[in-house]
Amino acid sequence: MTGRRPALLVLEDGRTFAGDAYGAVGETFGEAVFCTAMTGYQETLTDPSYHRQVVVMTTPHIGNTGVNDEDPESGRIWVSGYVVRDPSPRASSWRARRTLEEELEVQGVVGISGVDTRALTRHLRDRGAMRVGVSSVEDDPRALLERVQASPQMAWADLTAEVSTETAYVVPAVREKRFTVAAVDLGIKAMTPVRLAERGVEVHVLPAATTPEQLLAAGADGVFFSNGPGDPATADHAVGLVRAALEHRLPTFGICFGNQVLGRALGFDTFKLKFGHRGTNQPVQDVATGRVEISAHNHGFAVAVPVGEVSETPYGRVEVSHVCLNDGVVEGLALLDRPAFSVQYHPEAAAGPHDSAYLFDRFTALIEGTR
Image 1: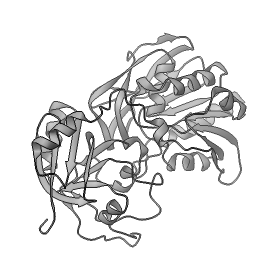
Image 2: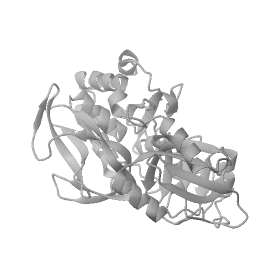
Image 3: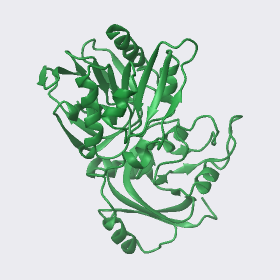
Image 4: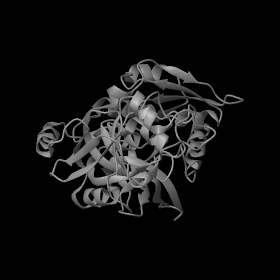
Protein backbone atom coordinates (compact mmCIF):
# COMPACT_ATOMS: atom_id res chain seq x y z
CA MET A 1 0.00 0.00 0.00
CA THR A 2 1.45 3.33 -1.02
CA GLY A 3 2.36 5.99 1.50
CA ARG A 4 3.13 3.48 4.24
CA ARG A 5 6.29 3.05 6.24
CA PRO A 6 8.41 0.12 4.97
CA ALA A 7 8.65 -3.03 7.10
CA LEU A 8 10.68 -6.23 7.15
CA LEU A 9 9.85 -9.83 8.04
CA VAL A 10 12.82 -12.12 8.66
CA LEU A 11 12.57 -15.82 9.48
CA GLU A 12 15.17 -17.56 11.58
CA ASP A 13 16.53 -19.41 8.52
CA GLY A 14 17.22 -16.04 6.87
CA ARG A 15 14.26 -15.94 4.46
CA THR A 16 13.25 -12.29 4.18
CA PHE A 17 10.07 -10.56 3.01
CA ALA A 18 9.66 -6.82 2.48
CA GLY A 19 6.35 -5.09 2.99
CA ASP A 20 4.59 -2.15 4.59
CA ALA A 21 3.95 -1.36 8.24
CA TYR A 22 0.47 -2.41 9.37
CA GLY A 23 -0.81 -1.65 12.85
CA ALA A 24 1.67 -0.37 15.40
CA VAL A 25 5.11 0.79 14.32
CA GLY A 26 7.87 -1.10 16.10
CA GLU A 27 9.47 -4.50 16.28
CA THR A 28 8.22 -7.88 17.48
CA PHE A 29 9.30 -11.52 17.67
CA GLY A 30 7.57 -14.83 18.01
CA GLU A 31 6.89 -18.16 16.34
CA ALA A 32 5.72 -17.78 12.74
CA VAL A 33 2.52 -19.80 12.14
CA PHE A 34 -0.16 -19.66 9.47
CA CYS A 35 -3.93 -19.62 9.92
CA THR A 36 -6.15 -20.90 7.11
CA ALA A 37 -9.40 -19.35 8.39
CA MET A 38 -11.25 -17.24 5.81
CA THR A 39 -13.25 -15.42 8.50
CA GLY A 40 -13.09 -14.74 12.22
CA TYR A 41 -9.84 -12.79 12.31
CA GLN A 42 -10.99 -10.92 15.42
CA GLU A 43 -11.48 -14.20 17.31
CA THR A 44 -8.06 -15.37 16.10
CA LEU A 45 -6.32 -12.25 17.32
CA THR A 46 -7.89 -12.45 20.79
CA ASP A 47 -7.40 -16.21 21.30
CA PRO A 48 -4.88 -16.63 24.18
CA SER A 49 -3.56 -19.80 22.50
CA TYR A 50 -1.78 -17.51 20.01
CA HIS A 51 0.32 -15.91 22.74
CA ARG A 52 3.89 -15.36 21.52
CA GLN A 53 3.08 -16.25 17.93
CA VAL A 54 3.23 -14.15 14.78
CA VAL A 55 0.19 -15.14 12.75
CA VAL A 56 0.28 -15.25 8.96
CA MET A 57 -3.21 -15.10 7.42
CA THR A 58 -3.45 -17.25 4.30
CA THR A 59 -6.62 -15.48 3.17
CA PRO A 60 -5.32 -12.41 1.29
CA HIS A 61 -8.04 -9.86 2.10
CA ILE A 62 -8.21 -9.11 5.84
CA GLY A 63 -10.02 -6.41 7.83
CA ASN A 64 -13.12 -5.87 5.70
CA THR A 65 -15.57 -6.22 8.63
CA GLY A 66 -13.51 -4.11 11.03
CA VAL A 67 -13.54 -4.74 14.77
CA ASN A 68 -16.56 -4.85 17.08
CA ASP A 69 -16.98 -5.09 20.85
CA GLU A 70 -18.96 -8.35 20.90
CA ASP A 71 -16.69 -10.96 19.27
CA PRO A 72 -13.37 -10.83 21.19
CA GLU A 73 -12.44 -14.12 22.86
CA SER A 74 -10.57 -12.34 25.66
CA GLY A 75 -9.82 -8.87 26.94
CA ARG A 76 -6.94 -8.18 24.56
CA ILE A 77 -5.12 -9.18 21.40
CA TRP A 78 -2.63 -11.96 22.18
CA VAL A 79 -0.72 -12.46 18.93
CA SER A 80 2.81 -11.11 18.95
CA GLY A 81 2.56 -9.93 15.37
CA TYR A 82 0.25 -10.02 12.36
CA VAL A 83 1.05 -10.68 8.71
CA VAL A 84 -1.44 -9.97 5.90
CA ARG A 85 -1.32 -9.51 2.17
CA ASP A 86 -4.10 -7.04 1.34
CA PRO A 87 -5.56 -5.18 4.32
CA SER A 88 -8.95 -3.60 3.73
CA PRO A 89 -8.70 0.21 3.70
CA ARG A 90 -12.14 0.51 5.35
CA ALA A 91 -14.53 -1.43 7.56
CA SER A 92 -17.81 -2.49 5.95
CA SER A 93 -20.06 -3.83 8.70
CA TRP A 94 -22.88 -2.30 10.73
CA ARG A 95 -21.32 -3.96 13.80
CA ALA A 96 -17.88 -2.40 13.34
CA ARG A 97 -16.68 0.16 15.86
CA ARG A 98 -13.14 0.58 14.55
CA THR A 99 -10.96 -0.58 11.69
CA LEU A 100 -8.69 -3.55 12.29
CA GLU A 101 -5.60 -1.40 11.86
CA GLU A 102 -6.86 1.07 14.46
CA GLU A 103 -7.28 -1.80 16.91
CA LEU A 104 -3.79 -3.13 16.21
CA GLU A 105 -2.35 0.36 16.74
CA VAL A 106 -4.21 0.93 20.03
CA GLN A 107 -3.08 -2.43 21.40
CA GLY A 108 0.50 -2.03 20.20
CA VAL A 109 0.49 -5.00 17.85
CA VAL A 110 3.20 -4.75 15.18
CA GLY A 111 2.17 -6.05 11.77
CA ILE A 112 3.24 -6.12 8.16
CA SER A 113 1.16 -5.98 4.97
CA GLY A 114 1.90 -6.34 1.29
CA VAL A 115 3.63 -9.67 1.91
CA ASP A 116 3.28 -12.65 -0.43
CA THR A 117 1.57 -14.75 2.26
CA ARG A 118 1.17 -17.69 -0.14
CA ALA A 119 4.94 -17.94 -0.60
CA LEU A 120 5.48 -17.44 3.14
CA THR A 121 2.96 -20.18 4.00
CA ARG A 122 4.53 -22.62 1.53
CA HIS A 123 7.92 -21.93 3.10
CA LEU A 124 6.58 -22.66 6.60
CA ARG A 125 4.90 -25.84 5.35
CA ASP A 126 8.19 -27.01 3.83
CA ARG A 127 10.56 -25.90 6.59
CA GLY A 128 8.23 -25.92 9.61
CA ALA A 129 7.11 -23.25 12.06
CA MET A 130 10.07 -21.15 13.16
CA ARG A 131 11.00 -17.95 14.93
CA VAL A 132 10.42 -14.70 13.10
CA GLY A 133 10.90 -10.98 13.52
CA VAL A 134 8.71 -8.21 12.10
CA SER A 135 10.05 -4.68 12.19
CA SER A 136 9.11 -1.28 10.86
CA VAL A 137 12.08 0.38 12.61
CA GLU A 138 14.92 -1.77 11.24
CA ASP A 139 16.04 -1.72 7.59
CA ASP A 140 18.95 -4.18 7.89
CA PRO A 141 17.77 -7.81 7.47
CA ARG A 142 21.01 -9.18 8.92
CA ALA A 143 20.66 -7.16 12.12
CA LEU A 144 17.03 -8.27 12.51
CA LEU A 145 18.03 -11.90 11.86
CA GLU A 146 20.49 -11.78 14.76
CA ARG A 147 17.71 -10.69 17.10
CA VAL A 148 15.35 -13.33 15.73
CA GLN A 149 17.89 -16.06 16.41
CA ALA A 150 18.37 -14.75 19.96
CA SER A 151 14.61 -14.80 20.70
CA PRO A 152 12.99 -17.62 22.71
CA GLN A 153 11.80 -20.85 21.12
CA MET A 154 8.23 -22.13 21.47
CA ALA A 155 9.48 -25.59 22.48
CA TRP A 156 9.59 -25.78 26.31
CA ALA A 157 7.75 -22.48 26.63
CA ASP A 158 5.61 -22.41 29.78
CA LEU A 159 2.97 -19.77 29.04
CA THR A 160 -0.30 -20.68 30.76
CA ALA A 161 0.40 -18.50 33.80
CA GLU A 162 0.80 -15.51 31.47
CA VAL A 163 -2.67 -15.85 29.96
CA SER A 164 -4.80 -17.33 32.76
CA THR A 165 -7.20 -15.31 34.90
CA GLU A 166 -5.73 -14.15 38.20
CA THR A 167 -8.99 -14.54 40.10
CA ALA A 168 -11.87 -16.98 39.78
CA TYR A 169 -15.16 -15.83 38.28
CA VAL A 170 -18.55 -17.34 37.50
CA VAL A 171 -20.48 -17.52 34.24
CA PRO A 172 -24.10 -18.24 35.26
CA ALA A 173 -26.23 -20.88 33.61
CA VAL A 174 -28.75 -19.76 31.02
CA ARG A 175 -32.30 -20.45 32.18
CA GLU A 176 -32.49 -23.36 34.64
CA LYS A 177 -29.23 -24.44 36.29
CA ARG A 178 -28.53 -28.16 35.84
CA PHE A 179 -24.87 -28.58 36.82
CA THR A 180 -21.81 -26.79 38.14
CA VAL A 181 -18.53 -27.17 36.24
CA ALA A 182 -15.07 -26.05 37.35
CA ALA A 183 -13.23 -24.77 34.25
CA VAL A 184 -9.45 -24.54 34.63
CA ASP A 185 -8.33 -21.52 32.62
CA LEU A 186 -5.17 -22.44 30.72
CA GLY A 187 -5.98 -19.75 28.15
CA ILE A 188 -9.74 -20.13 27.85
CA LYS A 189 -11.75 -18.45 25.09
CA ALA A 190 -14.80 -16.47 26.20
CA MET A 191 -17.19 -18.50 24.05
CA THR A 192 -16.40 -21.77 25.85
CA PRO A 193 -18.19 -21.03 29.14
CA VAL A 194 -20.99 -19.50 27.08
CA ARG A 195 -21.51 -22.81 25.28
CA LEU A 196 -21.66 -24.61 28.62
CA ALA A 197 -23.99 -21.99 30.13
CA GLU A 198 -26.37 -22.47 27.19
CA ARG A 199 -26.75 -26.06 28.39
CA GLY A 200 -27.70 -25.13 31.93
CA VAL A 201 -24.17 -25.23 33.36
CA GLU A 202 -22.93 -22.73 35.92
CA VAL A 203 -19.25 -22.35 35.07
CA HIS A 204 -16.68 -21.50 37.77
CA VAL A 205 -13.59 -20.38 35.84
CA LEU A 206 -10.48 -21.05 37.94
CA PRO A 207 -6.91 -19.76 37.56
CA ALA A 208 -4.28 -22.12 36.16
CA ALA A 209 -2.50 -21.91 39.54
CA THR A 210 -5.47 -23.54 41.34
CA THR A 211 -4.28 -26.38 43.57
CA PRO A 212 -5.75 -29.90 43.42
CA GLU A 213 -7.23 -29.29 46.87
CA GLN A 214 -8.92 -26.08 45.70
CA LEU A 215 -10.20 -27.81 42.58
CA LEU A 216 -11.81 -30.61 44.57
CA ALA A 217 -13.13 -28.17 47.20
CA ALA A 218 -15.10 -26.38 44.48
CA GLY A 219 -17.61 -29.22 44.71
CA ALA A 220 -18.27 -29.16 40.97
CA ASP A 221 -20.19 -31.85 39.10
CA GLY A 222 -17.51 -31.90 36.42
CA VAL A 223 -14.15 -30.41 35.44
CA PHE A 224 -13.19 -28.74 32.18
CA PHE A 225 -9.63 -28.06 30.98
CA SER A 226 -9.31 -25.31 28.39
CA ASN A 227 -7.15 -24.49 25.42
CA GLY A 228 -3.95 -22.51 25.97
CA PRO A 229 -0.50 -21.61 24.62
CA GLY A 230 2.93 -23.12 25.04
CA ASP A 231 4.52 -26.55 25.22
CA PRO A 232 2.42 -29.15 27.12
CA ALA A 233 5.66 -30.81 28.23
CA THR A 234 6.02 -27.95 30.72
CA ALA A 235 2.47 -28.24 32.11
CA ASP A 236 3.21 -30.40 35.16
CA HIS A 237 0.84 -28.42 37.38
CA ALA A 238 -2.08 -28.82 34.98
CA VAL A 239 -1.29 -32.53 34.65
CA GLY A 240 -1.57 -32.81 38.44
CA LEU A 241 -5.02 -31.18 38.32
CA VAL A 242 -6.18 -33.64 35.67
CA ARG A 243 -4.95 -36.58 37.73
CA ALA A 244 -6.79 -35.26 40.79
CA ALA A 245 -10.02 -35.15 38.77
CA LEU A 246 -9.43 -38.65 37.38
CA GLU A 247 -8.60 -40.12 40.78
CA HIS A 248 -11.88 -38.79 42.17
CA ARG A 249 -13.76 -39.98 39.07
CA LEU A 250 -15.06 -36.50 38.28
CA PRO A 251 -16.48 -36.16 34.76
CA THR A 252 -13.68 -34.48 32.82
CA PHE A 253 -13.57 -32.77 29.43
CA GLY A 254 -10.51 -31.17 27.85
CA ILE A 255 -10.00 -29.28 24.60
CA CYS A 256 -6.80 -28.39 22.75
CA PHE A 257 -4.16 -27.83 25.47
CA GLY A 258 -6.59 -29.64 27.79
CA ASN A 259 -6.40 -32.65 25.47
CA GLN A 260 -2.62 -32.59 25.65
CA VAL A 261 -2.49 -32.41 29.46
CA LEU A 262 -5.03 -35.23 29.70
CA GLY A 263 -2.76 -37.27 27.46
CA ARG A 264 0.21 -36.50 29.66
CA ALA A 265 -1.80 -37.32 32.80
CA LEU A 266 -2.48 -40.75 31.30
CA GLY A 267 1.25 -41.30 30.73
CA PHE A 268 1.58 -40.45 27.03
CA ASP A 269 4.17 -38.14 25.48
CA THR A 270 3.49 -34.99 23.49
CA PHE A 271 5.43 -33.72 20.49
CA LYS A 272 5.72 -30.60 18.36
CA LEU A 273 4.10 -30.67 14.95
CA LYS A 274 6.03 -29.46 11.93
CA PHE A 275 3.68 -26.55 11.26
CA GLY A 276 0.55 -27.27 13.32
CA HIS A 277 -3.16 -26.92 12.58
CA ARG A 278 -4.69 -23.45 12.67
CA GLY A 279 -7.93 -22.32 11.09
CA THR A 280 -11.63 -23.08 10.90
CA ASN A 281 -11.61 -25.65 8.10
CA GLN A 282 -9.76 -28.68 9.47
CA PRO A 283 -11.31 -32.13 8.74
CA VAL A 284 -11.53 -34.50 11.71
CA GLN A 285 -13.01 -38.00 11.71
CA ASP A 286 -14.85 -39.63 14.60
CA VAL A 287 -13.22 -43.07 14.68
CA ALA A 288 -16.28 -44.82 16.12
CA THR A 289 -18.85 -43.51 13.63
CA GLY A 290 -16.76 -42.51 10.62
CA ARG A 291 -18.46 -39.12 10.69
CA VAL A 292 -16.32 -36.21 9.48
CA GLU A 293 -16.43 -32.84 11.23
CA ILE A 294 -15.08 -29.60 9.83
CA SER A 295 -13.53 -28.05 12.91
CA ALA A 296 -11.65 -25.07 14.32
CA HIS A 297 -8.04 -25.66 15.33
CA ASN A 298 -5.15 -23.81 16.91
CA HIS A 299 -2.37 -26.09 18.05
CA GLY A 300 1.28 -26.78 17.36
CA PHE A 301 1.65 -29.81 19.64
CA ALA A 302 -0.07 -33.20 19.72
CA VAL A 303 -0.35 -36.34 21.85
CA ALA A 304 1.47 -39.53 20.84
CA VAL A 305 -1.10 -42.31 21.28
CA PRO A 306 -1.49 -45.44 19.14
CA VAL A 307 -4.49 -45.14 16.80
CA GLY A 308 -6.82 -48.09 16.31
CA GLU A 309 -6.02 -49.89 19.54
CA VAL A 310 -6.91 -49.71 23.21
CA SER A 311 -4.07 -48.55 25.49
CA GLU A 312 -3.73 -49.40 29.17
CA THR A 313 -3.01 -46.49 31.54
CA PRO A 314 -2.94 -46.00 35.33
CA TYR A 315 -6.53 -44.75 34.98
CA GLY A 316 -7.83 -47.63 32.92
CA ARG A 317 -8.20 -48.16 29.19
CA VAL A 318 -8.09 -45.32 26.67
CA GLU A 319 -8.59 -45.13 22.94
CA VAL A 320 -8.19 -42.50 20.24
CA SER A 321 -11.64 -41.11 19.45
CA HIS A 322 -10.83 -38.65 16.62
CA VAL A 323 -8.08 -38.25 14.03
CA CYS A 324 -7.14 -35.47 11.62
CA LEU A 325 -7.75 -36.51 8.02
CA ASN A 326 -4.98 -34.27 6.71
CA ASP A 327 -2.10 -35.94 8.54
CA GLY A 328 -3.44 -38.64 10.89
CA VAL A 329 -2.66 -36.67 14.05
CA VAL A 330 -4.56 -37.72 17.20
CA GLU A 331 -7.50 -35.33 17.69
CA GLY A 332 -9.32 -36.88 20.63
CA LEU A 333 -9.07 -39.31 23.55
CA ALA A 334 -11.77 -41.30 25.35
CA LEU A 335 -11.32 -43.18 28.62
CA LEU A 336 -13.28 -46.41 28.79
CA ASP A 337 -13.17 -46.96 32.55
CA ARG A 338 -13.55 -43.39 33.87
CA PRO A 339 -15.79 -40.49 32.86
CA ALA A 340 -13.30 -38.47 30.84
CA PHE A 341 -12.67 -37.49 27.24
CA SER A 342 -10.97 -34.75 25.25
CA VAL A 343 -10.50 -33.33 21.76
CA GLN A 344 -7.61 -31.47 20.24
CA TYR A 345 -9.79 -28.93 18.46
CA HIS A 346 -12.24 -26.16 19.47
CA PRO A 347 -15.92 -27.17 19.69
CA GLU A 348 -16.93 -23.69 20.89
CA ALA A 349 -15.91 -22.66 17.37
CA ALA A 350 -16.22 -18.91 17.31
CA ALA A 351 -16.48 -17.89 14.48
CA GLY A 352 -17.52 -21.39 13.38
CA PRO A 353 -17.99 -24.03 12.08
CA HIS A 354 -20.38 -25.70 14.53
CA ASP A 355 -20.09 -29.37 13.56
CA SER A 356 -18.52 -30.18 16.93
CA ALA A 357 -21.00 -28.46 19.26
CA TYR A 358 -22.38 -31.88 20.21
CA LEU A 359 -19.30 -32.42 22.40
CA PHE A 360 -20.72 -30.05 25.02
CA ASP A 361 -23.88 -32.17 25.02
CA ARG A 362 -21.70 -35.26 25.46
CA PHE A 363 -20.08 -33.64 28.48
CA THR A 364 -23.38 -32.75 30.14
CA ALA A 365 -24.67 -36.28 29.42
CA LEU A 366 -21.52 -37.67 31.05
CA ILE A 367 -22.20 -35.56 34.14
CA GLU A 368 -25.84 -36.63 34.18
CA GLY A 369 -24.83 -40.29 33.95
CA THR A 370 -22.52 -40.11 36.96
CA ARG A 371 -24.82 -38.28 39.36
